[in-house]
Each structure stands twice: as C-alpha cells, then as structure tokens.
Length: 306
Image (cartoon, rainbow, N blue to C red; front, side, top):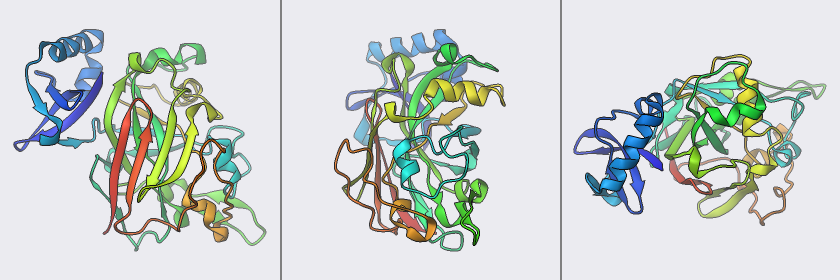
C-alpha cells in the first residue's frame, strides 16, 4: 500500500494511492497515527481502500510530505562510487557516517527547495532511499532489523557543499555536517510511503536522479556499503528507534560535488549501470529535480531563490 498525505479544500488528510486515485483513510489523522496503530490500523486501511469509498482523482489533490518525522537519522558515504568522486575523510566507507536532520528541514512533493545564497553557493542534491520505522527497538540485531520497518519512502538529502566540506592547507579533509546538511528545505520527502510488504528486499531497487531531464545518478540499492538492516542496527545502538523515525541511507555517484575540483571532486561516471550526464555545476533557480526509486515513485521539486 502507498500511503500519502494530501491537501484538499483547505484540509490535510491521510490516504492511500490506488492507480490514479487517492482513497481517504477515515479516522486516521496522520501517518504517525497509522504507524502507531500497528497491524490493526494497517488492516483497517486496506479495507478502506478495498471498499471504494472516499475516492478522489489524484490530479485534484495536492500531495504533501507523507510524514514529517521529528528525527531523520542520516548515513552518508554509503556507496562506493560516491566515495570515489569526492574528497574523503579518514572514516569514509569504513563505518557509517552519522548526522541528523529534523522536521524543520522537511518539505513535500512540488515544494520549492530554497537556494539561500547567504548560506551557500554550492547547493547539491542526493536521492536516497528512506526507511520508516514501525516498531520500537534498541540494540536491534541485523538479522531482525527489517521486522522494525513500517515502509519506505524517498528523501532528497539537499546539501550545502561549501558548508559541509572543510580542508586544511595540508590536504586533511573533514565534514561539518551540521551546517552542511540541516537547514530550511534540505529534506524533501515523499511522494508516498510504500509499506514494507510491497518491498520485501530494499537492496534490490533502482535509484535515479534527473535534473532538468538529464540522468545524473543511477544505481542499485544493492550497491550500499551498509544495508538498510545494518543501518537500523547501527542507529539503534545510539537511539531507541521509535515508530515514525526515518533513516536515510546515502546516495550513489553523480552528485555536483564530482565536478568541483576545489572541494576535491572527481567525476567517475557512477557505477557504470547507465550512462550519466555530468553535472553542469551546482543547483540554480529553476532547476527541476526528480528523485526516483523503483516501486516508490518520483519525488519532484524545483529550486528557487530565498
């Protein structure tokens, strides 16, 4: 099932996608409530979809971020080809990179990614598979980790590269992941949450990014260095994972960083699965970003000046 949050007639509602229609889920105020309701709430939602009541054309509603998580736990440097295209820190690819985004970063499908030139002149994007936690847990073993997943969505890890990448005269590189990653509009999320039963293996999905129609990123999620299950295990060693928390899992090669030699970038052409178009520089106003993940959909946003 594909869970969506949508606006219609001035109200925000929760629904499920069924082809080119949205079925409203009565009595469920939010995705958070649906997740916390467990198996019974999910079964009631499936019955609502099957009943055929409360249907609206998808074209007649405005999709919003399907969930606004209080905490987005983020892993970077998690694809080998991305590590090859950028300046690396000593731990890149050797252990999961750990940073956090908050609800203040989240925007939905069709919303504007703000290029604030007082913050950055090197705004980049990263399509990432996102894991939505459904069952709480701490110190979760890898082999049981996927039992804690409610579903999957897409997050665009928008990044201010000139805030993120720091280098000293001796060539040592480190990342300032606070200012580089967490700011207004830096976490477009959506367009839906696909429940875990529809994605039995999250490591067998095709990920793509298009900017103004040009294919910039393409990879299998099987190319992750640390799988979704391993990342759930890793983050649960620091936090009790709670329903509605989101984990994002890194991005493959093809970012604009790869064409920026000043920040240690070097173009490698992705993982070779599909021919990519090298970035034409960092994001500019008017750029249309399409973040695609197989079985989930396309998250589309436009860049604007702020």
